[in-house]
Length: 347
Image 1 (tube, one colour):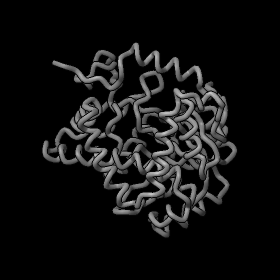
Image 2: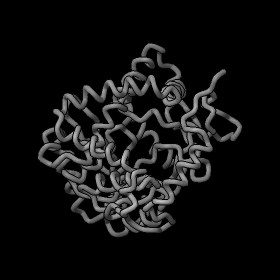
Image 3: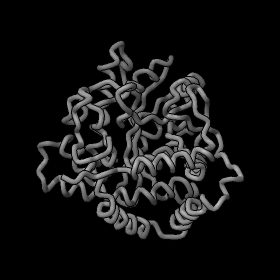
Image 4: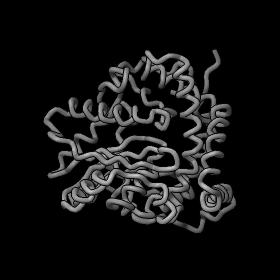
């Protein structure tokens, strides 16, 4: 049986990684601190990076000059194309739906799979919208319940640290931008890129309205931010590996590797854990903001982590077609020999 590969060959990947790291502008390290501005060095103008600069400019031009409806139309078809040219990702999507929804009819899974791919294509434009649109244009596409907004503003003004609990919808970039625009700016948790142009673009885009970014592997700086009463956007719904995870249920998978970060960060004095997420509804991006969790955290980290997964499940089921099912969410199993994605050659 032929297996799919998510990545280029290991040899090519090492070569590309070494090339990028030669020019990397990322400062790594536990407790390294906040990224408060995009880093630019002259070497980023070398021909090696021209393709990346063209891609960034093209994204800016498309989201700036094309009508929104045209962007979503093109994005939909890009998503359908991605499903054909990236069979490994299509396989991951298929396996995730099989694992998460074993009782779902095949016809429903196929329908959901198509919707996920279409929304993944739209996400390319929605990332550009979050990074490049001016406030006046973005606000024409925002929806929020008036009572939720008033309550969220009240909480933001309370002076207590807020851990904004979210998940990886394809609209996650927009969620952080909209929350910062309507409620309060804060700190984004992100994955730094060794490619200096991609790093420059994502930092510049994400800091359009927010205060700073912090490496997802730097919990010490996250704690510092909370101790300074700065809100943090936090999405703990991906598989970060065995070393930093515990195993709790997530949908039909009884033992899904999940970080205990929400429990740990919430232990900072007076921290409020506030679920917030954005769903595309027609041409509007609806920001949902719930009241902070009660009786959280407890002394039971495992129970708290399972509770967070239940909350995220509820959020995802509001729009499962807009969730990032292309990530190997169930890659890490309690038994290291168990392979939940047997159709992949990648480990």
